[in-house]
Length: 157
Ligand SMILES: [Zn+2]
Image 1: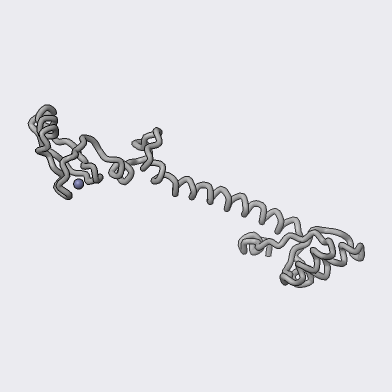
Image 2: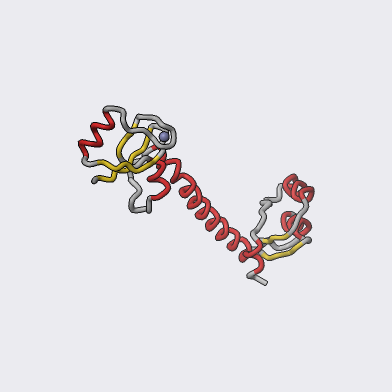
């Protein structure tokens, strides 16, 4: 007895029991095989791509990019890309948070004073309204509106 994994043209996967490989081929070419789910007689041996995607471990995953394989692996690739981006963004944010003095709501005023040479220049961070930010930019003050992740500023306090 031979148990074969079969799938139909619709992607349904099922098991077929045959006396031998030849038995399978005979039944298949005689269209005696049919999918138990949809009844179609276009039956192929082997695991279908959908089943491979669902059940495969990373070792089983073929490096040859079948179309379904690409679709299945895309979210994973995106997740990793996102993780890398988040890590990089956290790193930059920490750097900014550590280098710049937090002047809070005095930010806009102080940035302007430093720009005019009324105060010593140093990296500062703080809160500014969109209006203040626009005014600073119009004055030619190099400000960069950034939302620092909370963790980067909390660890400093
Ligand atoms: Zn089917």
